[in-house]
Length: 269
Ligand SMILES: Cc1cc2nc3c(=O)[nH]c(=O)nc-3n(C[C@H](O)[C@H](O)[C@H](O)COP(=O)(O)O)c2cc1C
Image (cartoon, rainbow, N blue to C red; front, side, top):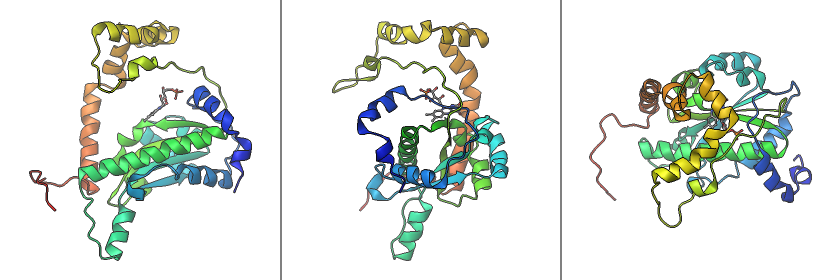
């Protein structure tokens, strides 16, 4: 195994986390199989529900497959520009198959099981990302996966019980963008119980974000009056949210996670 701990002193780890940024441009240097395999091995050490590991990861390296994936990610340049594309899937197929082979009746054809597997897949994805970044690799998540999950399922041959939940592009960085902002910690943290926000707190917590030059530029470029309008009217707008919700709900039905006619909940033995 590539001796990663020799390269990454544990004392560097907080620097790695605090200095990270999303990388969307990669050099042509390949990511070798051994390094990728080590990163994935570390990623799979992530916590997982009941130690079931109800996820799968599809590695895309071939140019032809990246070109086929690209339009499903709205032609974001990272797909064809990265040496490695990873599609993280919620996966009860493998576990169900094991149950069936061992005289156990799988009972995971429901929404809760999808959420369980999606949580597992996202935890492994983020752990893979941290492991990769600790090696100096750059990563970018692609949220487009859930928008076109139906098409990704066809392209990647995902069977029933498997739903792609996120995609990560991976490669050696060919850019060092400015770090983007984060809300102050006090905006995020609630002590013991959730304390709902006053308007004054909302003003306070979002002030720095709104006053950034890049935010102002973003508002201007999008011809909007305020920063949230860029989100509600352009980036994540109602019509798109509703359309892609319908696509995803159909995917969950097709992949066996939504019962056609769910029963009124009754707790049984
Ligand atoms: C679930 C998820 C989906 C994302 N989807 C995209 C995407 O489709 N395209 C993109 O360029 N960046 C995407 N990102 C990256 C975010 O834009 C980025 O993490 C955010 O702007 C903060 O920047 P930072 O990671 O450099 O701190 C995504 C991030 C997450 C967590």
